[in-house]
Image (cartoon, rainbow, N blue to C red; front, side, top):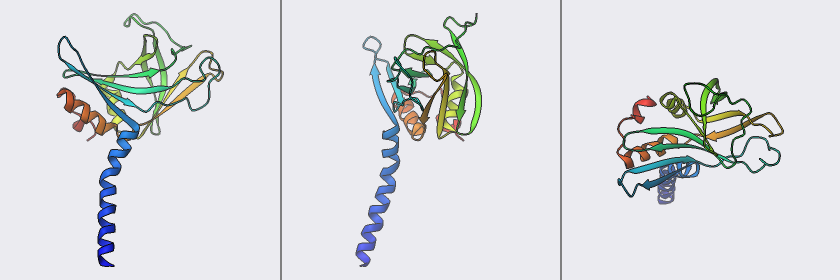
Length: 189
């Protein structure tokens, strides 16, 4: 009986060690890309694809999104990927940016604030204030993005991203690229 209890404790301890890795692997993917010309490595930390919290109407009913972080040895950038081109109705132009921008509400756990984003290309929205934004992401367990999506059928569209495991994925990305310009461990302390 004592041996059985000891074995049970060992199995339980092993599960506790494996569980964080399992959560990390469910919520975040770390992908590597190497530039064949310069041999520079870029790592992409990508969240699980999410659907809007409420269904959108045609032609956006299958739209998905991921929160992404690109990392090289010398830089980090944060952006959102969408499977359909974001058709943002409240986009505007500012002389400080070459691409359209959108000021919209976001929610870090329970904290609601307004952030500025840059709409680039057919599928991307970039985060210009990456240091602040990344710090807030690392301090949170969940992030909610609000977009005024033209033709969505519901006005505001919300994408909810699970942030559990982001810290571990970001550390892995920085380690693989040798990025020391952004101190991940100092950000969350």
